[in-house]
Image (cartoon, rainbow, N blue to C red):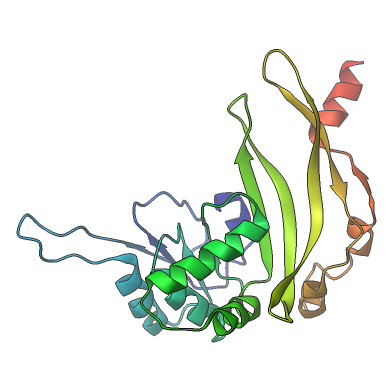
Length: 222
């Protein structure tokens, strides 16, 4: 999340919401909100859901929720569906598709009695891109998959992978060997990036094996 936030324009107003403050955004106009536990008498608690409701009154361009764990995800999706494009959050899931099921579960935890079809349509209209990061056997974290949620059709999510990391083997030290690949899918999301500096990246999505910094350093060593 910190890495992604580096690409946010310094002209935008950002509100961050966290259970425990960890984000370190460098933009000049950032409002950091942190949840507060209840006191010894069980009073005074302010949870992430309360913070999300109040953040909408702060006129943010983007809302960043450090981690969506429960009912606050409904307010997060509402914010995304009411003009706060570029908002971000994290969830714990096995892959990008499983993350969508997790969002459905958290909507149910919010107490909103939405049919599954309505919840899925709501998620599909709010979420565009998903990045899956996993912890490898050697303890390192790596981006394993970047997927695009295109929409919702016939009761199912329409998900296309943009980039995937394919593991070839794991050595005796636990180091994972593999490569990143572009699948060849040209993201539909690029249609609303035509007014930005990212509109000339068609070659980026051509199907191929990607050359990473690791592979470049290996070549220099040889």
